[in-house]
Length: 113
Image (cartoon, helix red, strand yellow):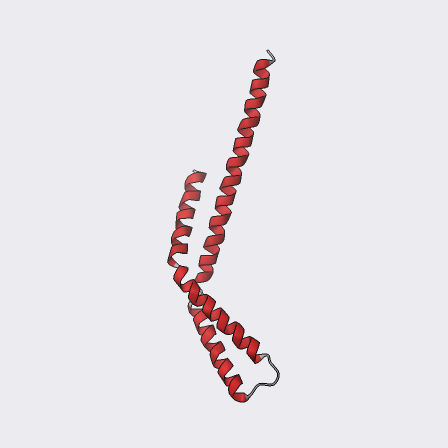
């Protein structure tokens, strides 16, 4: 039952990842515009036209970033897939180690008789 749940969650996360790859590029572009606007606005000696220009660029970047906010869901889906896959692999490894210890104990018990 746990394996089925992990598979279902994985399929849902993979479908979310596949549907949100394109807008992630727009989110990166918006973030870049916001970064450069903030970086250039924080300079000391800039003209009024430069301030107006970088405010407009920053507003465009904010608009793009707000429009692509569902990509946060994309990032969370990637984290969920990595978490569930690593957890599943660690559970499989632990059960394999447990089986090996039980086999060795049983073999030792059989050979000592």
